[in-house]
Amino acid sequence: MILMFRGGKTAPKFCLLSQDYKKDGDQYICSHCDKSYRKICSLRFHVKSKHYKIPQFLCELCEKGFMNLAPLTVHKLEAHNVDERFKCNACNGTFNTEIQLQKHINNFHMLGRKYRCKFCEYESFSLQGMYKHKYKHKTVKDYHCRFCRKSFLRKATLNLHERIHTGDRRKVCKECGQAFVQKASLNYHMTKHHPEVNF
Image 1 (cartoon, one colour):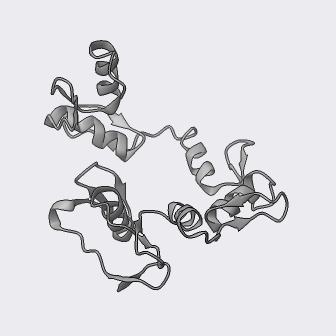
Image 2 (image 1 turned 60 degrees about the vertical axis):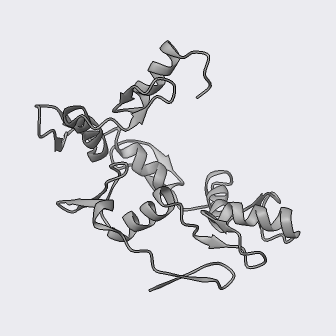
């Protein structure tokens, strides 16, 4: 498979290395940040764009690379005076990607498909919003810690918790070198011990 960049530029397929991920049941877990995915292609895109910073889109006019489509659209407008933005017919708003325009139409003008929660009265024009909402109804903690008796609603929360037991402290204070499991703990440390530093 060849990746096709916008503008016709091509690049070889990105391949995951064995140290980039681990498999746990039906989940592919990123070794860099513990995010989990059901599909290997989703993990591949995540690792490529978040950890290796390989651009997904190239400007066909100057070959500058971009991780997302929106910054490419802005770049073309500012650097080359080429306007490829998408316009809303209802309010003349402009958007950098077709997906942004569709989200605007669905949420702002409420013209898209409505997703209804089967447990309550909640409605959303966004499927992503509905997925987030559904967690409010989840009560069974399916993910169990291997080291203690704690259980969690989400796999990502379990992965983060298990770092406490394994001593995997990836969040390091740049001021004093102290390491933490969670970003929230690092933020608290910065506020308490290095209040003069903007982070």
